[in-house]
Image (cartoon, rainbow over all chains, first blue to last red; front, side, top):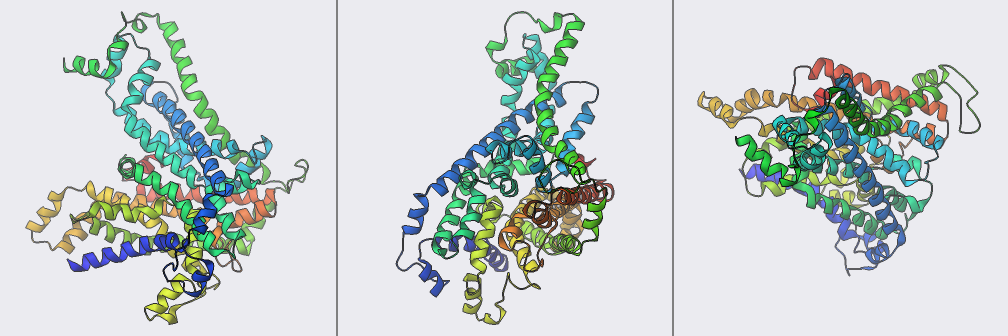
Length: 267
Length: 327
């Protein structure tokens, strides 16, 4: 089927060429970029990447993004698995209502809540603070975490818990020693989802942060672009480098991520 | 007996610690213990969730009744005046229309392309895994990186224009982001580039749930491949397609990052969306009371869509978390 391969080649080109252009463009000078937009570097220059990689702007942003994403992911996975355990393995009145309350959170996308969150954070003094971004991100990741984890924990046979209890384990011990290790695939999936959501977030950091030294990577990229409009080559390099952490996480986690999405979609 | 073996493997020797104690406790203490456990397990998640998801909504409703720009206490109570201003404002309506256009274009253009590519990538061919990864890559990039990248590509006389000239389509070069009649569609192309991989992976997952025997049976009955796709595969893909539409519309309604970075909703509001309208009026102009009213209106629109969609489109589907999520 040559036609099918032609289509695939076209799709590949449309997907990959913009990213390659960005990366290669970072090796050119602004003058080269202006005189021939589609040309190759001639000569190759390393100074754009060099100056970005030695700047505190870039590394501060990477560090801020990492701190925020680790806190948000850790909280979302820890709290999410606690709630999913209680909602899947305990019988108590109001359990389904409580589950629905968490699930209702799926209907409130974080972007729509940006201004109300700003007003709340202002009141509790968390503006311009890394926690002011990490805590809401964790909270908004809880619904999807619980929705994925609860059926997973439910599917683990009850006999396992009975056996653990007969062996003298408390429910909490069963949770920590048996259920959590068995839930690892699902925990990794929800962890990756929460991490990527946090790592890529732009709007909440935009309204929360004032101090450029606190900016996470997406905010720093957009700010860098609007600050150095004359220094196009350096913007190319900065933006290309901003892709690296996300792509690295993706390469590391792709199998789990794509597989996990499949699991999430199929319930 | 198989059970005992399995437990032994999973639980390990350290959990076997003497006689069963929990089972022997009086029921009263067991009930108390359970309540303590539930409090410890559910308390922190519930607190975090209520504080950062539900309290802001309550805040928004409360602030939306005041005229307040960030200084001093809330005193200037204006009732529903902010809502009146939002709903009668020409720019807000225009922004809502832009969201609706993006959502409609997604369903009409992105969905058929995604289905076609998913069908193509579902066949066994060389390099299939690599191809799937490649189409998914843009979805992993941040919206900010994507937006800046396309800003650079679309600069007047930049890469896209030069490419069009190079293949003899120089007449097609445009002011991609500066033309009021074109900017929304340019942004739609960027949005499509960013999100189409997610749709393809979603649909591929759905396709994998369809047994190959069904198509084979159709083929034996004399169906052409096209007929088998139309009559067998697509109907069975229905639940996945309906979830894709749900996610796509919700995403279109809250579109912000890419638009804000590339155009700030301009030129002359030609690419404004509801959330860029919210950020411009609520945060940049610090009209917090008015912005809170915009937020409440956005919540209601997205909530109403979700409920209506659940009621009319997702009702019969049992596949998928989003389905159960709404109901």
